[in-house]
Image 1: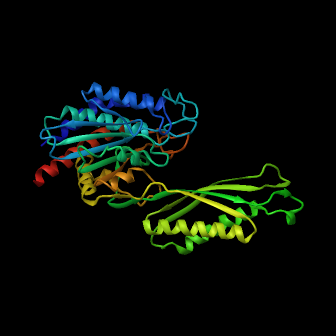
Image 2: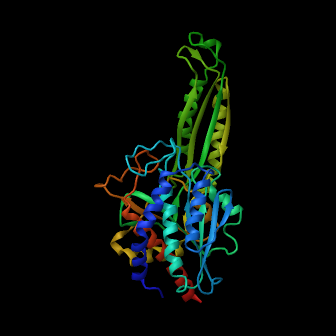
Image 3: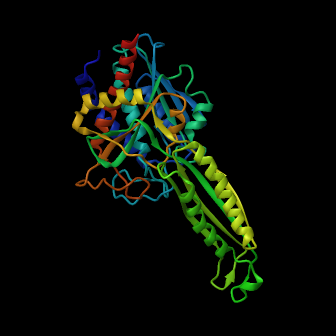
Length: 401
């Protein structure tokens, strides 16, 4: 049994180095599936620990193993995502993004550095635990089809297959020093909806000689909200939101077509695909009824994310022991989506939240915003807690045999 204080001491010892790693990654962000320099940097960091990674998994992903005693006995996987977002950073910080228009606005720099920090702790302790730790650094969490799905297809969860998997994600709405867990269903599936409404263009003063796709698009957008709300089970959260509408180029011209895009979120797979049919039927029917047409393309994205009850219960207990019960809170259902969901459908998994919010330091802005940043005091918590939870997963398996 590894002493918890030993883990905390190592977390304190490695916190500064991990913060430096986080700042380097933050200053050098790369978009989804383009994480070449990031992957090289991660590989270099692993080699400083004596860990030789497998590179080029799913393109820019990496997989590495830390073997303890009896390494074949049980494996726990730790996941990090490495991609950034197409956002121009507005933070005035020394490690501000040097890649114009690209920013780590979702904390993937934190996720990657924390898995590296946890790996450094676990590498120091490998003679003290039984089993193996698998490190998974994936590309493309922010973009379909999701780097997790590609990592799985490329064998990242094989040889050895993990018996448990952990994902840690920043949460600016939780105070630094606190974490959040939820058993069972946690996050929604996410599909991208693309509609192309086609009419017949003409002069704005002569609508009778045209088929106005803007009017048709307005009808479709309004109607689809009703289609979803009147057909969804009110006990099962679901969201349809349209984020873009593009059509026309002058105020006095009726255009030929309008393009609309949006997102559909659900927590029930049967309803999810039934809704796809309803959206398609309604959009095409309304357009045809008004003299036009509508092409519907639904890009099926990430599935729902469900936390394995036993794995999550054990992780929560470990967090309560490590941080104190008062610093561990329940999470609500979240209609956001995460490609970690793919792992949760293959391996018993726990996806939990690391508090990074601090009002005095101004780190309470939401993710996916140009002013997002974290309280870096959360790094020490993140690396120590992830290592401790992984060790408790291994210990529980050892005791169950």
